[in-house]
Picture 1 (spheres, rainbow, N blue to C red):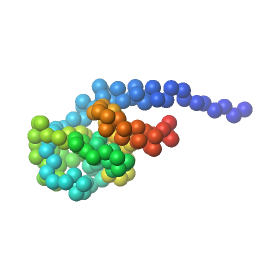
Picture 2 (picture 1 turned 90 degrees about the vertical axis):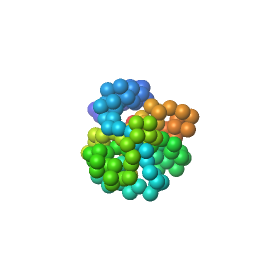
Picture 3 (picture 1 turned 45 degrees about the vertical axis):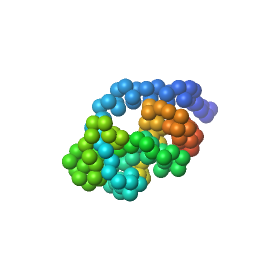
Length: 143
């Protein structure tokens, strides 16, 4: 007899994961805030150590959101990051730097689940629309 198990309440599990990410993991990942000099699209990150999250990642994944705030996940140290990508430390800057905590890297962005979480946590109508696009295109098919 072939038994198939089905997860119920997948969306609520996702919402719980986002809440736990926001309250437990994310605060431990914050490195600092910076001002991004130049056009963000002209930054060529070493995809093994640095990727976009949040709004810029949403733009790259959906071509739907023009970033106003920037989020970078990186394994680089502070000095290396500032020098390599022409960032200026600024506690009120529009760019937040977080520690990259996963190993497998594909492309220029954080994993879609993380980008989705970033957008939901940031809030706002534009971010919610982009998050829904990411959910339907990248997350829902894998739930």
